[in-house]
Amino acid sequence: MRAYLRGRALRCGASEFAVRARGASALGAMWDPQGEAAFVTDAGSSERTGSSASEPRDDSRRTSSRAIFRRLPDLARGLAWIPLGEFPTPVQFLERLGKPYEERSGTNLFVKRDDLSHPGYGGNKVRKFEFVLGKALTERASCLATAGGWGSHHALATAFFARQLGLSSRLYLFPQPVTEHVRRQLLAMFGCGASLFARSRPSLAYLSLAATSLGRAGRPFAIPPGGSTPEGILGYVDAGLELAEQVERGEAPRPDAVVVALGSGGTAAGLALGLALGGIDAEVLAVGITTPLVANLPYVEWLHRRALNLLRAHLSASEMTALTHPRLRVVQGFLGRGYGYPSAAGAAAAKRALTTEGLPLEPTYTAKAMAALLSFASESAAGKTYLFWDTFSSRPIDPLIDGASIRDLPADLRIAVQRARRQSGREPNPAPGGPRPPG
Ligand SMILES: Cc1ncc(COP(=O)(O)O)c(C=O)c1O
Image (cartoon, rainbow, N blue to C red; front, top):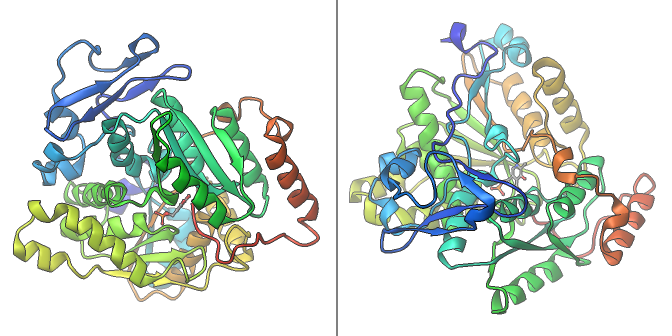
């Protein structure tokens, strides 16, 4: 297998009916609960590849572009969903990064490139949002709201896809250490047209989010931090099934373990479920990037149960029993000083990934997960295959920033960020409010 996996993308199919946005609005398509497709559209400024908005659509073709609907065809009937990303994402052999481990113990490293899941903004939110935003459109939302840290990928993805769908977005943001990556994330949120609201701590940001969802004005749709709702988790059930299909086709190795960053938990929970449903007996090693008070096994197992319950009607009793106990381990020890603080091991691992494979990672999640991967590989038993699930968007962020600067931010946010930047270096400013949640 190695010969044809070496150093290249195996397959990256484009979703057949990709939604392409121009400017601030785009065409959104959805399933309604009756199983009849409906459009939420601003056709004047948008286009859909494959057919025009006025043509009847072949919805079975749309959903059959995703592994979860191939495996559970009836699921599409009662579930809101919208195609956003380009799947399947490639699987690549990490030959140069993994060389020392291969020489020592025959251990091989691979990466699943979800960082390429969308041409404008990739990463792990795209799969979740196909379900979460499908639901938002079903509810005729005109505004997406969420909460997260200043550098939250989830918040940026919310702003990005809101704009793609012609919706507005409201982001309630709380402090985190201001790395260069975080600064650019924040500017990209602004550049995507989001309304940004500074909150001094996570709990206040979550309260504001809850208040938004109570309001009726503007039909807001509140997305919980990280997008790890039961529906969102189905995006990663789909991902696990997608990998199972790639393995089946001989396009990817059968992994012994999958290594992924653990924040709000939906990615790891969904992967464990999807892999098991697809017959892949790999252990999911979920690397905690926030405090164990938030990122812990009982919590991820709870998310797993909630997603499994959504599938209950489509599975036999024996399948339900087989899927009840996920092959999932939560790995602590790679967090370093705390959520959002770069760690030395993470920085070293990210540097190795970049220099050996050209794989860009960011400090908060994927660098720490990569540090864990390299640690597992160095202690690995003979002949193991590890798959690193890349959850970060590696797409260029400058087009999203679009020339914005810190000076353009709302005054309270700008002042808080500038103060934190001044303090960082001397004392990296942990925000009040206890454990720092993901997002
Ligand atoms: C880049 C990146 N990787 C991993 C995660 C963790 O995913 P989850 O919140 O589903 O655990 C996040 C969460 O925001 C993220 O931004």
